[in-house]
Length: 266
Image (cartoon, rainbow, N blue to C red; front, top):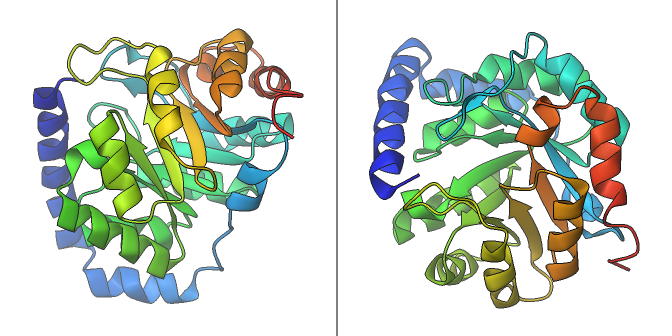
């Protein structure tokens, strides 16, 4: 996505958010959060030996258009979990990705592993929404946030029991993520200027992420060979969507991707 596309997506997110805020005041969400079961901590699984996977429920993307007609996101997520996924990512952005919070709620009810709300989060309200829907993690995209907002949302996520996955694309964004204390950093291999994906992006940035911070490789991991490549470069976790939703046997696909990293992380 170019910066222009990112700005356009966020503008649409804010429009849709205003509709939801009008329908469900923040106080209602806060009351719901008070009765939601405690969140699940993904970090132990992410730090364990071997390559961990966040498997994604993803219907479409801005660069590829429609990917899969996912009639039952809960069933897909259950297949991912059965294949060994350590967490499930659910796209909840509607306009470009065809997702919804209803998808997240359905997935949360179907699996017993942590669930990530993957969206363009720019306000407190979205974090409260995520937790009220049962999310355990929330994505924060550094490119879409200024430093004070990034720091504020990172702190609020932790306060709500959400593990922030802080996404970066450049060396400066790695610096900004670390400055707010991110312990889970995802390197997106998609170039924000030309939409191209290159696994060398992860390889060029991973060395800037210190030991003790969990490193996630995102985008462009389309085969077990790709999974092994980023694992060899230092990935603790891979986030995979397109290759799984287009595979005829998602449970087997998850297992194969994870197996590709065997023996690389003690």
